[in-house]
Image (cartoon, rainbow, N blue to C red; front, side, top):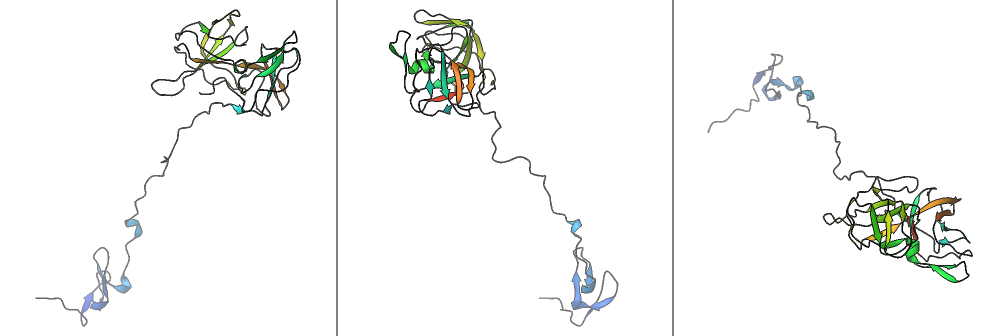
Length: 266
């Protein structure tokens, strides 16, 4: 089998300079040229640039931005009282950011003891504090009147109601806020009329986007709100109500009461 000689006694001609050099001192360049090691030139880096991709812009783990809906605040224990002979409800809610004209929905766990104008003991019930009841009959998406099962002390000269609804396809809340101009005051069910469907109400000075008018079934939960009539410095605010007491009540309402937007499941 044939083989090549090592060339230890041989000479070679450089492809670059044309000069003669010892064969064993010759090297091969990247382009195939056979040159002496003193003439060797490495490959220019710019002839073989590294691949550079585009700048990263999109993120792998992302969530779409959204406008967070307002949420209820937990109040101090027994935050409610009714001043004497005043159709208002005083609420302890420090540094709430709530403004005059806002609509506030309350929850409570305890009645408020009151005194009637004839000095008889009475109460403002949890249901009356929360303005909670149910629809007495089905309504369509365009109905301009509705009936509620119970009488709750919502203002007679106009106000707002929220009907709770869960979308059967998505499982998400699709509540509707409705503005009314008047309601009946004798007997039950109570009829609300002059409805403006699919509206919304201000909370902390901001009115969210309008809700969607839709059909609702009898038995759906309904809640009312109260308007903020004045502020008590940083300690809270005063809400309009139809409930009165001859003497100022002690603070009541129980623990874990909340104050928040009418639609707290946007």
